[in-house]
Amino acid sequence: MDLWHIRGGRRLDGVCCVQGSKNASLPILAASILSPSESELHNVPRLRDIDAALRILRHLGCEAEQRDNEVYINANGVTHSAIPHKLMLEMRSSVIFMGALLARCGEARLSPPGGCQLGKRPIDLHLSALRQLGAEIEESGGEILCRAKHLKGAEIQLPFPSVGATENLMLAATAAEGATVIRGAAREPEIAALGDYLKTMGCKISGAGTDTITVGEMSYVNHTEHSIIADRIVASTIACAAAAAGGDVELRDVEPAHFSTVLHFLKQAGCDIMCQNRSVRLRSDGNLRAVGEICTEPYPGFPTDAQPVLMAALLKARGRTLIRETIFENRFRQVPELLRLGADIELCGQCAEIRGVERLHGTVLNATDLRGGAAMLVAGLTAEGQTTVCDDGHIRRGYESFDARLRALGADICLD
Image (cartoon, rainbow, N blue to C red; front, side, top):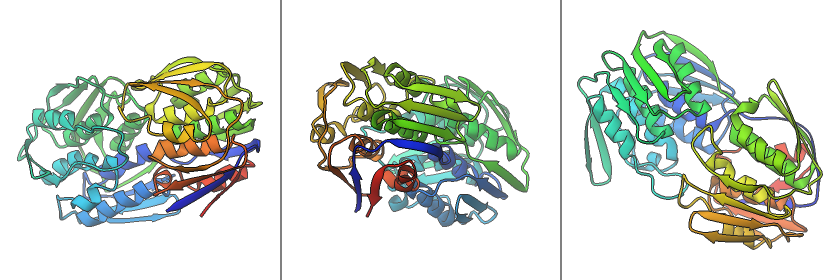
């Protein structure tokens, strides 16, 4: 059990280099098995989810090692196409190995993914799309078996821009005969990053990061090298923390456009924000105002992963803010814990109304999930007295050395 102890009331000031993206790293780690080759990955964060992915790679027969923020993978020795249930349960993104294994081995045997319990996680879109490439899929006893003697390129229309389904399709399509066109694809920066990595592996791919992606066959290379993009949700979390606590923080090694919707609402709340190439500077006096209505949407809309941390930043904002959650039905699990700090939040279905309060009072909280736990840390920075967040490892699934990063900015926080 991790215990995060925060004493609120400290400004955040200074420069913070943002870690590499968890959500960009995981599909790239899965993609590394597409060919019997070596990959060197830079700027990979040290996280529980990354450790889980590396264990899956080693189980499949790869050499996989992380040193600091560098990862080396040798996929020459892939011998297995099944992932044990225990490993699948460790992270939500484990299902992304399905498309990669199907392309490399002609079959994949796995169970539904684990991770934060944010609601139903149907993978019907993944399975339906892979069937259109020629995969045969059986589901029984909580296990999914995908087989394909021969994958054939197709035009596939996704009914919803699912990130996972888009990634699985991109990976499987690298082994299909002819071109695959994915319409209605997810447009997240992490999708574009996966496309860039596939190009270094010799894949003919275009349109990654737009709603139409074309994937051709691969001309395999022996060695690839790739650098992971900055984590836009971690950047959003630090920006929200600085906005709520007050301060002057510069985020470096980031792409401002990747979290521009979060910055938009922080500016509406009263923050002074200056964006330059690869950096964002945010100044706040901590006296925020409500921002009206926020609605989570697929990228380039407001990200559901940033919703809990922005909610936490606005707990003391003057006025009322309405947040409408359209992606996950259980994304408001942090609300009962924030109420224990003295927040005023009313839930009605998939909407939450935040009415700003004058003070928050530190107490003991229980982290509900990765982003909900991060939201509690943000709220604790603005609460009077000490806040302790009890966490069963959720936060460290997505935030690397987060206590040290916040302390470097002036926060009074420690992790036991």
